[in-house]
Length: 274
Figure 1: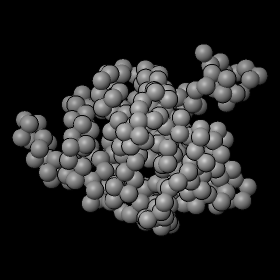
Figure 2: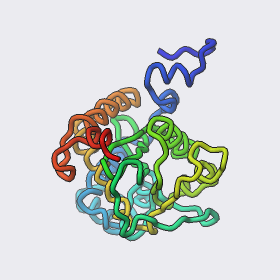
Figure 3: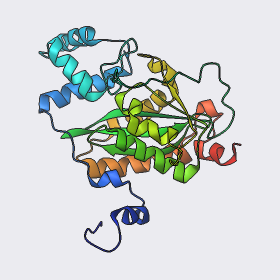
Figure 4: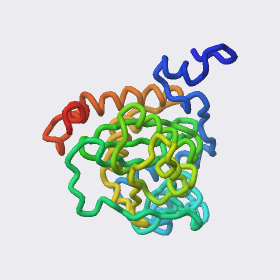
């Protein structure tokens, strides 16, 4: 499908085929079969008890018959992205040397599209490994403006997803994230602070430490993605996962009725919102 060593660049070939460049390079992250099973169980349990820390999760798995100690639990939580409400041993581990920006959404009335975008990363299980999913959602309309999967969580990956979203939909006024090292790094932040950058002038907002509820709308998106798609299908590899998510996000944006949107679709609101 993609041919290398031709006059047409890889970027242009991806544009014509409407696939993400990151999709060319992903390989599932490998773990033992037992660890993959434990991580799948933890991922499903997160939506029931997001306030559990490693001690309670260790006890919970022990009572289900699995031999897990706290050290192993901490490693799995960090690897998969468990976001405990009171602390974050996860995708959101911050770098103390990076600047943290204030949370700008408190008491803010969100009234139109491209006023506020939210970006986040979550863990996606597959039969023989796992990948990470990053998505950006428009908070007023719940429209997913862009998404991508990868086997690593890098600042460059997150930046490229935002750049692509801006090129497709224009600049939001505010972009909100957690305090993860990907989102506090200079490589990501410079997208909004460098005068020569496509995202220059966008205001940066960051959740309070350990407060997953600050980013509640994208947390709800993750729950929908997983219960309505990921847990219903056992994807064998990254290609199947990519195709499955592509169909789901099209459904989510254009066909799925949202009760919070008065049973309208995100795409219909995004087109008319001003």
